[in-house]
Length: 107
Image (cartoon, rainbow, N blue to C red; front, side, top):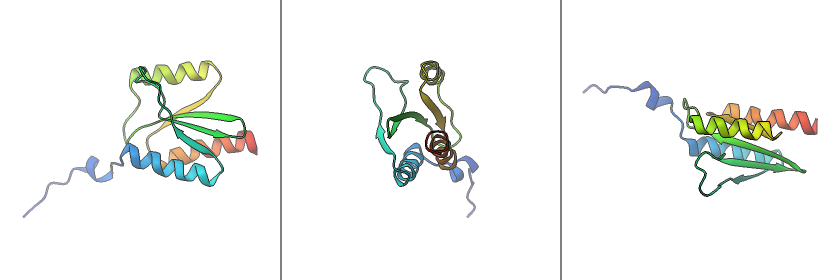
């Protein structure tokens, strides 16, 4: 019997798995990660990270996916207000997000 392999399905990592791994990593760096929900606004960020008066927001996607148009607009709105915000679709990029904030604010 032969099986058809679907490359995207083999390498795909769920949004939940990416989120959980990045939050676990952030905790090792002293961050307090929290689920971020704003009722009535489906485009809001997934996570908020808190540490020593520093606040950062992140939109998390499953591997290979990008934010929707409304999510991109929301990300830009936060950036325009001076907040730290980004999106990622894999654990390595999520860790880089945390590390870049660490280096910038806490040296």
